Image (tube, rainbow, N blue to C red; front, side):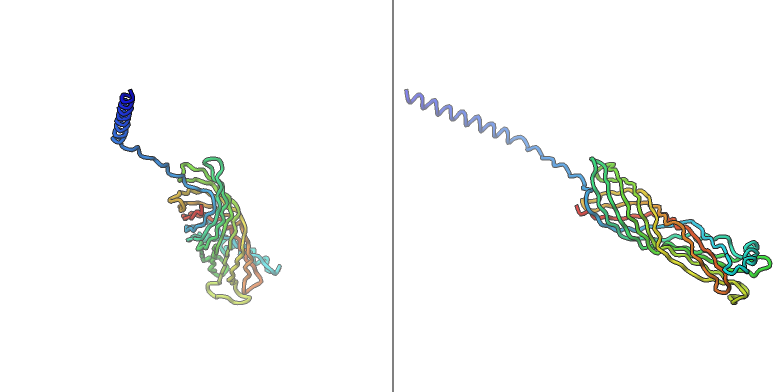
Length: 274
C-alpha cells in the first residue's frame, strides 16, 4: 500500500517538472519585449544667461533752427532763414552692428505658457551723418553737417511666450529702455571760413542718457537640454532730445533736435541653468 502511494507521488512530481520545464522553454522561445523610455520634455523654467549680435537702424531727421541770443540779430536770423542759408533738416540715416549680453528667468504657467523677465546691455555701432552745401541769394554759401549715434543701450523687459511644441517658444516682449544718445552739428562759411563777427560757424557735440520704452517679439528653440537659440526684433524708443549748439563766431544758437527711435534685429544663444 505504502509502495503504491510513493510511486504515485514520484510520478506526479516528474509530471509537474516536465510541465514547468516545457513552459520555461516555450517562454524562452519568445523574444523579450523592448522597454520604451519616453524622452523628457525640455525644461524652460529657471535662470538663463546668454549673448547676442544683431543690426540696428533708424530713419529720423535732425532739425536745427537758428535763433539769436542778441535781440538785435533777430532780423538777420529771419532774413537768413528765409533765404535758405542753412538746410531745414538733414537725415543722417543712422545704422550699425550691435551686440551684448542678456540674463533672464522663466516661469512655467499652465502647460504651454512661459512667463519671464529679461535684462540686456548692448554695445552699439548705430551711427550716421549727413552734409549739405547751400547757395543762398545775398548770403555766403554754407556747408552744414550733422551726426547722430547711439553709444550703448539696454532694456529691462517682461516676456510672455507660448510653446508651439516642447522645443519651440514664440513670445512677445516689452518694457523699459535706456541708452546714450549723441548729436553733432557743424556749419562753416564756404568762401571765408570762420571770422568772428563776420561769418557764421559752429562745431559742437552733445551726449545724454535717455530713458524710454521698447516692444518686440521673437522665437526661441531649445537645441539641447541646456542651450537655446533665438531670433528677436525690438523697437526701441528713447524719445526726442534737443541740444543747443552755439555758433563760435556770433551770438547765435542752433537748436539741434532729433528723435532716437531704433529698430533692432538680433540673434542670440542662452544657457539654461535647469
